[in-house]
Length: 416
Image 1 (cartoon, rainbow, N blue to C red):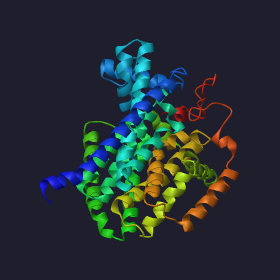
Image 2: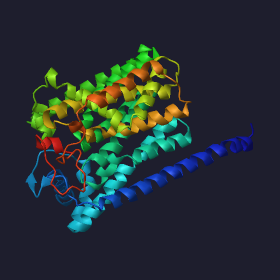
Image 3: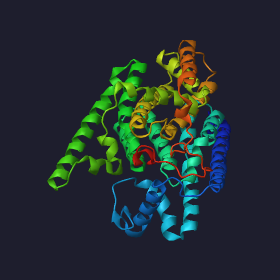
């Protein structure tokens, strides 16, 4: 082909990419404006004491360069959320600072459309990738954009980390592993819950290797694990040599009660099952079934696309570990389904649905029918009080409620 013929052949693809990119930008602008407008219907701060804490930490960070509460020392809560909302709170008066902080939160949460689109574009057509981004942005869970909490940054940064995890599985290399660890570290700097990304990486690598029927894909991971263990040992040695401590409080900060919680007995494991059912509620059923159908086509090797295999491996590993993590946490500290801690599953469910449709909606009755039966059983047996409580709790409280939200069994339960 001549140079002019190549340019002519490539131009339709470039125009299509340009149109879809502009569509994603438009979605982000509309979502940011809509979430910011919706936030005007309720007062901020609403969730006590967490929003006050994050706001004061942000003011201290921008005013004094330290994560302190009005100059008083504080255990670690979060770094990136105070850094985001603290600038307007420190620079402006309280009312204007809160409004600008809300706007930044709405933008941060709406930016999840970018990694969602980029990920979906690897496993689906361009416009179905746009549809995946739109599905995430219309979720009611995004009303947390109006709060001074960690949900906005958590959703976006964790989604980027999961995308980097999938890219590392698709094309294993030390560089891609390092990029994923960097984003996982950033996610943990928003909310320590994101540390579940690390074991999810290991489990996803095993699933990917099994789906590919290729154990050699684990070799780069073994080298990376050895390097990571050596680096961790060096950090521990330097810390101890400098007279530091490695206590639970030093590592977990304000989340220390989580690390010190006693184990959950077998009788409480039903809370994990309830959270597993809530994944279907979060994605309105169809997204879960579509993702299960995709997983079946990959694990049965009906579809050997490396990008799709990496997506399925990541989705299966992260969903399984997150549900267990949140279920055990809720069993001790919440007592009801804590759906807001599952919100990072939204992009996975949206990408799964749109990829399934884009690939011709392949049937997978052996897995879809039993899964649908389990969803129906869950709908019939999960107590309604687990999904909606008369008292507004921080993880499910409607902004228009006239009562202050409860902190449930522990202040940790409301910590965003």
